[in-house]
Each structure stands twice: as structure tokens, then as C-alpha cells.
Length: 113
Length: 110
View 1 (cartoon, rainbow over the protein chains, first blue to last red):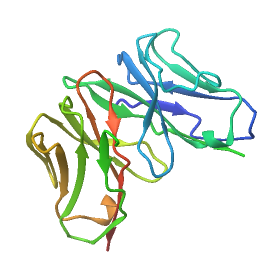
View 2: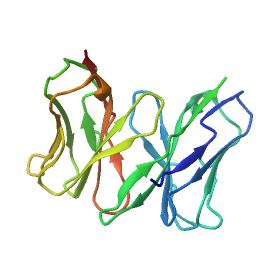
View 3: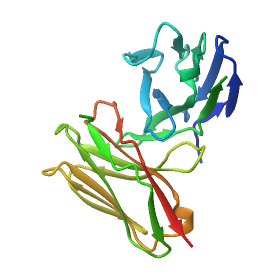
View 4: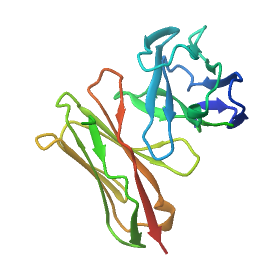
């Protein structure tokens, strides 16, 4: 069964360092999302791609966060510099099906010390 | 007021009980409604997907949507300890922007 892949699964870093997360959506899925999920809360959208184009990055803290999907397939989310408040689960998702069902990857749990 | 409201729980029930999980929403443009199950330290897993109002059943799970009341529910019959997880509701108007509830933590006691 096709799945959304993410790496690393866990990342511990010190504040002010740079971190990067990678996502490979299900093959053929044109729409890709990055979400941040703080413990005890629902996922909140950071950025949405349609192929290689950004559709919505209104909630992305652009002073420190950047995202790219250069060839319209896999994607990278970067944080530089990381802050304590960035500790969260970072989830990648893509959509498919006749009704645009959204499928999530396993997530990257980030801890900033 | 948040667009989607969900009781965070935790909700503890004995094994075999019927569980009712609920979300309310304020945006009447929402047309597509989803329920996800999320185990600790894992990504959300799509459980149920419903378009517009009505019921949808899949095994022990039933999703209900009442658009007139802006209220959706997920029922779990014959609950099992393996159902212990956080359940997230999500919805979209079809614009590919999905809004999530905060999630309800469920614990099914053996």
C-alpha cells in the first residue's frame, strides 16, 4: 500500500541551529501539505503545494521557516534558527481519490533544547 | 471562536461500550467531513470520509453529519482497547484547505 514517507522520524536540536525535514508523498499526488501539530492540539497548516507551486503559506513563519518542492515530487521544510517554541510534530500529507481524501505520513517529532 | 470545536477529553470507557465523539463547526461552507485516528507519536490515519449530510458506516464505525446543526459525530461500537487513541475531526469546503479539531483522547479499558 502506498504511503507518505517522512524523515527523520525524530530530531533533537539546540535552539539557534538549523533543521530540515523531508517528505515524499504518495506517487502521483500533486497536492502536498506541511502541518505543525503541538501536543494536545490538531494539525495546523504551514504550507500547501500544488505541484511545485506554493498555494498557501499564509501561516508559515517566513522569517525562520522555508519550504520547497522543486520538482513537484518530494518536499523539504527547513527551520533556521530553531526556537524552543518550535518543538512539535511536523506532519506531511498528500491528497488523492475522487473526494480528495488526505493521507498523512508518520511525522517528524522535533525537540528543541 | 474557532471554526471547529472538539471536546479534548480524555474519555474513558469500558471495553465493549459504544463511544460517541463529536465536533461542532461554524463555517456553513464545509461540505466534506473526515475523522482521523492518531496513536501516540504517529501520524493521523484516515478512518471515515463523508460528503454533506447523512450517515456512513464502516464496520464498527459510523459517521454522522448534520449540516443544519453544524454537528458531526463518530460512533464506535463494541469498543476495544486497541481503539485507544486521539480522534481528530477535520473538514473542508472543497478548496483543499482542511480545518482540524483539537482531537479527543479516548481510552478503552480492558
